[in-house]
Image 1 (tube, rainbow, N blue to C red):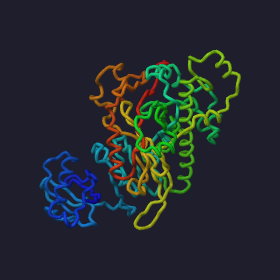
Image 2 (cartoon, rainbow, N blue to C red):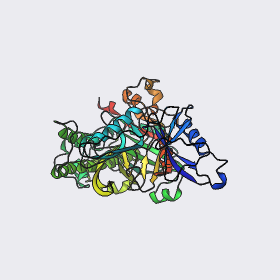
Image 3 (cartoon, helix red, strand yellow):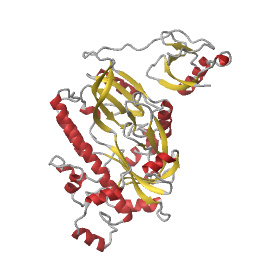
Image 4 (cartoon, one colour):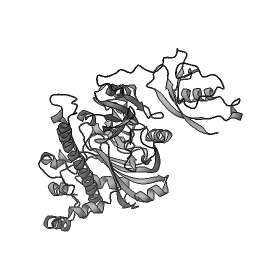
Length: 501
């Protein structure tokens, strides 16, 4: 029996919706297969509400037992007995645009506060549409895990960490003698939180970054930073698509490093400059957009250079050799480093970077509005691009990570994908404050966590995040991505900041 995709909406709260596959009965099946019962079963399970018993078609007509749903209808509303409410009133903004919104989250839990933040974006001038990813969660002012199309640019929607993203690099074959504890010890001694001892200006010049704007942030180059940023050594747990893995260069029996960080203080300084007199400025004039984009693109490049340098430092820390800052360097290595002029381009090529995906950015693209194709700025806040190849989707430090392949034409998901599992609990949630610091340094997957900041260790514990599997299930169910490979955490580096105290 063929399937069709149906969106089921809660009649009483139409921000709650799921998309399911419903078998399409053939003429011989009409008297034995009940579409209404199938919809109610799915709705009761997904919405965790056993009292749903009415299915409304758009317009308010009830879907009767054994009645078929017309081909042109792909949405129904389910009710506990309340009358049909109908679609919410669409408020016409002063600019005449009626913004649309949707959330691609059916398995993954999305808190109503995050949905409210996302819905509020529709009232902003120039916004065409907002799409929430399965990792959507509440932010300080604006939601995290969404993509927004707008006529102009809202710097505050992109946030302070312009260019934040995730990169993947190979480390080499998995050495039997390097246990997670031994690797963690190397990272702890690697001085990875301290300023890099190399020439920051020369490293940045490889990326075409010149000028003075980044001067005050040079000391942060090559460091992970705080919050949810990390560098994680991973191994291949399971390959789903061998051909895709071969094309990337991801193989079983090898270690890789995922680096999640951004532009450090540089992006925050740009946002401060734009929000001194207006908390949420809207850049619509051509010149002001051009000036902002120049600074934005600069920060995106800086963040990419930062991730590469973090990966280089980790690789040097583990295996020694050129560029190592480790206390465990031999005297000959230190003397050679002092006298030889390093070739940073060689350092970069030796990284053999596999993926680099930015999830905090804005891009000029096209958007179909009222039947016409118009220029629009796609703001991604915690959303990875789905139009540039494979995308890493990390879980918490105690969960698996995935690499996914974008699918479909991109319209449903605003050419974007989730950037991770997404927070389940806020940082100050009492439920996170269980156990000791030592207990939090090992995980259920036998991986090890390097984090000498007790407060950060608690805030970023695995239970603070959603299930990454639910996120993957959502994007696969929606047809916007397919899982390619599962990565297992080996060692997660957060901070060794006590070395600076």
